[in-house]
Structure formats: C-alpha cells, structure tokens
Length: 245
Image 1 (tube, helix red, strand yellow):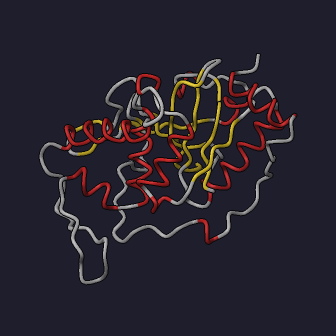
Image 2 (cartoon, one colour; image 1 turned 45 degrees about the vertical axis):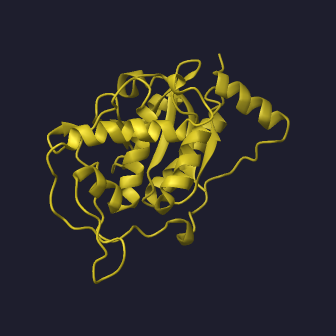
Image 3 (cartoon, helix red, strand yellow; image 1 turned 135 degrees about the horizontal axis):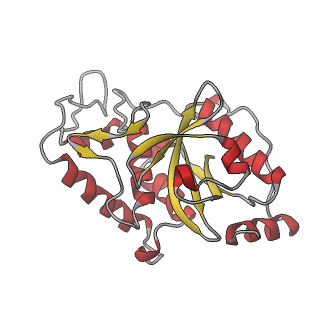
C-alpha cells in the first residue's frame, strides 16, 4: 500500500508536475565551503553521540526535525556549535566568523534543549507545533537561519515504486559523496520522523544520525528497498529526502 506521501508523489508524477531527476554529479558551486574552523556536533563514530556531558538526542517527541536542523546548521557553520558550547563568536584576524575555541562551557545540555525548542518554533510558524515539522518548514528554516548550509529542496518518495526509490537513493548518494548531509523523512503510512544521513561507508551503507536515541547508525540500503527501516530508524517507510538544491 502506498504511503500518504507516496500517493502525492504518484499523483504529481501522473499529472506531470514532478520532474524526475536522475543522479548527476553535484556541481562544485553547489557544495558551498564551510565557515572557518569547522566544529560539527556529530562525529563519524558509530553509536551514541555526546557533547558537554549530554546526549545529542531530541528533547521531546516533536523535535526530531529540530535536532536534525541543528546538526546540519552546525555542520555548515561553526558559530552554531559555538553558541551551544557557550563560546563567544569573535571576529579573528583571519576573517569574520572565526570562533574562539574555549571548549564546552557548563550547561551544554540545557542550551541544546532550549535551542531545539527555539528551532522548532521557528520552523513551524504556519503549522501546529504538536504535529512536528513539515519538510517545507525544514527547508524554509535552512534557507532563512542556516544559509551557510546552502539551499535544500524537498524530494518526495513513492516507496512502492522501485524506480522512484532507486532514483531517490541515487541522488542522495551523490549528495553524500559530495560531503553534503541529507535529512530523511521516515514513517509508517504517514510521515513521522526525521533522521540525518551523514555519509557513506566503504561497503555502500549509509551512516545515519537517529535523534531519538542520539546515535549514529549504519543503514543497509536494502532495508529502504524492502520497506523495513524500523530496526534502524524506528519506522519502516521512506517518505522524503531533503536534497541540496
């Protein structure tokens, strides 16, 4: 049975409103340089992610999208991490945006939780907060509040169509190979949860940040094709990917 998003994707493709994009190399201009002094929140290490004594998990049942947005913003701009660490962002002699590396100040966990609540409010201005964040709210927040990450676009997925799934996996793989994290929206028949694909292992599996557990896990793409993602990501179905525009 098609998911709600799959039905929308199918109707859109039938009506000619969805232009299918085959995987192409990401132009270098689309891979924007990171700000000076990169300080991502998440590491490449598998397992639980911690910083300042706190686990990097979502603060409540509606802020998975916010946790993903913060991780993506921190990947692109060290000022986001500095804000959470309690550092002061200073204009250094080598240019604006450099960060004073003073370590992680006491209270990181409280700042991280408060930041999630703030981002959730900003990303759901036109949507009930209790329902989480829409994919369009996610990309709108990135465009407005995390411009260093570059623009993203919503790519819906019809996961009962093998061709559509393969196309979505291919374009996501291209972005990951170019060093661009990709938010994924998963769920059951309806979308429920955001995770963040971070990179590709040597065997082709993806490293994915799952904010409920605050962990980086490995995802075998066979599970996407078979609609059996729950053992890794909590829900079985892939609904959408948010791709660099």
